[in-house]
Length: 197
Image (cartoon, rainbow, N blue to C red; front, side, top):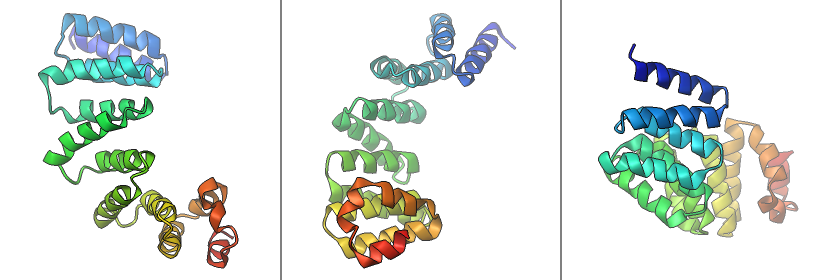
């Protein structure tokens, strides 16, 4: 094992123990010795994100993307950091870079549906939900997200059908719907009451 491999292993162990500042310090050393070390660049960006230094994380990911513009892991982690600082349009642009090459990339589709939801583009978010469910029909979280979008579009019957699908997958969605302020407008709906009972 080389010196750089040893350093990377040490940094990764510190990261796993949530010693992000120490891990970042070692990742910086690795990158100084090997500016093209994608593992160190990506992991440093991730450690920066975990320590809520999202702008620095984005800068780190971008430094890796200069040399590797289609590196999926860097792009996905950059999307996540952009979402955290509400740079939604930039995050969507990065989603599309990946989805143009890999239209069924689940994690990117998931980011995109959440971003569209945050932008109040419920119809487009709903389309992404349907796409994910066509690939992974038993994804309870997506059925729940679909129900939320439908509720915001005032399609209460369809919302309740999606909520029912989510609950059939896991009872945790009963509690989630009961506690979500969004569903307050259904609190007197008999079907909703029965579903979340």
